[in-house]
Length: 277
Ligand code: PDD
Image 1 (cartoon, rainbow, N blue to C red):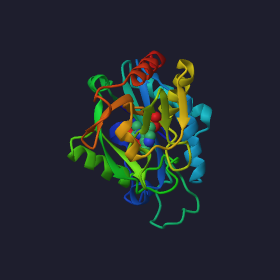
Image 2 (image 1 turned 180 degrees about the horizontal axis):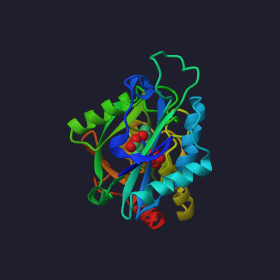
Image 3 (image 1 turned 90 degrees about the vertical axis):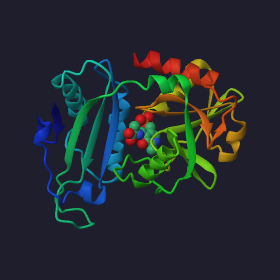
């Protein structure tokens, strides 16, 4: 198995870091999770664009030009002979330097990307999943795909302990997104989701969902909805590169509508499958 690094491809076992590494000590870095279907990168442009936006937002210089990034991510799949469903994890930190909150004078970012087999969550996609609600205690710049994931980790762990798939995050009752996915609410044939402001991650699949809605003549409304609205939701779903378009059938033990995946969710799942093929 080969990894992509800022210095080219290396064997996975070869990668070592000094203990003073800014990703480890400060979470001073950014990342992407890219879906691979049948050995091909899905939504690669959206992911690469977002990676460079995140980098710029934290004043980090990506070690490669965009063109090279596309080429290397393609090579990563070829070198590892990926032919099936997988995911790429890529992270870039501000590098290794003596611990100091301020940037090192001449930062040398550390980058690595690896690819790992990942099958589609077929059973959950069919039956739908349950979620719990949790306060969104994150910072104001969640559009940056930062390595600082402690609030997300804690929210997801609480969900796991309660037997749920995801944690739906809210600020004073207004739903922002989930711990590692975007959240949607369907009412009277319209799909509602939090506007793509700075306080949520602008999901690549979310962008696709907007596009599918347009194609299907479904109104896509970027308006916040509240925890209390879920009581009369017709449908709910979430989206991410790993969960795809996932029906939510229960929130905090309460069924959403009749507790089965809804019709619009099914249509969007179908559109996703055709797109990812
Ligand atoms: N998470 N919101 C948050 C907080 C996320 O972490 C993610 C992705 C998304 C969905 O983004 P996208 O559609 O681009 O995958 C929304 C990845 C999968 C992760 O951290 O593993």
